[in-house]
Image (cartoon, rainbow, N blue to C red):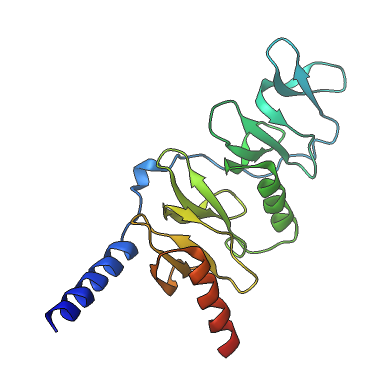
Length: 208
């Protein structure tokens, strides 16, 4: 009997710890975000051979945006996908004034492309979310299509949301569960691996 009481108390303590294990907001980089300004279709993405950095040329061959990015693509509908020049992935989207439309927090260009598609479809901010690591804390959270943290980084690892709006996550103490897009647990983090959570989600879907 005493053993059962001890195990129950330990489990409750674990759940409380998991639900409150948010990373400090100081670990999240701050970026100002701006609107699209002009289409940018006339600008040409170009690598400067000497520095191997990317910038954007005017039609007359002068730099509209000086070379400063590790990677970049041409403008489309006023946004160009770029990667900051540092060790972290830091992909985002700029306008023709070289200001962030999509904050550079994404880990690859494909996710930024998905974010741009979401914006162009007129979807509300936060309808689609992308699992992303915060390189400052090493924890995972979820970005909306403007690169803003919809769910602040507080997970050891995280999967993308499925078609039902559920995502499998690992807490900082190594336990697995599943959340909805409000960050609420729909499967409590009491499992030792993601496969068991996937099975639990499948069973849950069968009864809904």
